[in-house]
Image 1: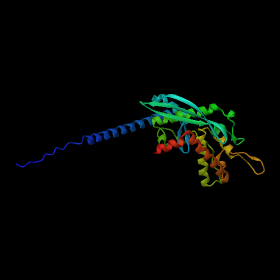
Image 2: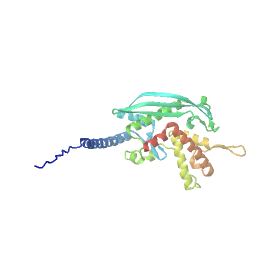
Image 3: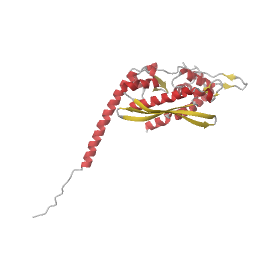
Image 4: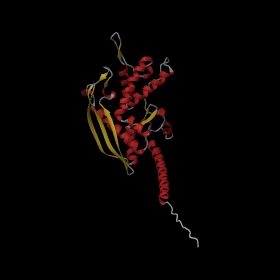
Length: 279
């Protein structure tokens, strides 16, 4: 009688289990996507055009708009802290207010941070002298409020998954880009080239973001960075609208605003966060 080797083949339960796990994860992810879509629709409908700002062509939810969503979804914030950090630079002493807190919703939580500096151009810059105000002249309350507002917006929008939205998404729920708050500078000069008009728009958007959507502050800032002393010693008054800037004066103003805008993003953490989102 011939001996035959009987080989018992066992199923790889680990592989089968992994496949089941993947199916489960995919199903949960799809369910989460549908949930976030519903959240997005409800959230946007709860806001009004006055709660949005057009910044660099992108929609930005203001602090008042973000706070409307807290009771609607049952978002809670705890452990809020406000720290005043002293610093020193070539212009002398300064300080930064950093607001932090834990935002919770549906059993999950995140920690968010908002900040504002006493070097913020819209709270500490004197457009008449073209220099920063002395710390004693800076309204410290404004710095504190801006840091807290930044915290609320970042925490709520990140937790609900409604950050980095597009106008195409918003218009589906009744928020039209043409109806939201923005700096209205009017039409550009007739002698402005197409390239200069593009730069004027970029300048306008940077200023609006740094001014937290406040048109008066935006105008005052632009007036300050465009004021200069001529060769004859006379002070040339600054302008309040980018549309009035062309040529070398536009280039200089744009360069100054771009530098301040980069500092603004670093101080608030916006640039780093956006980079992380892309990754």
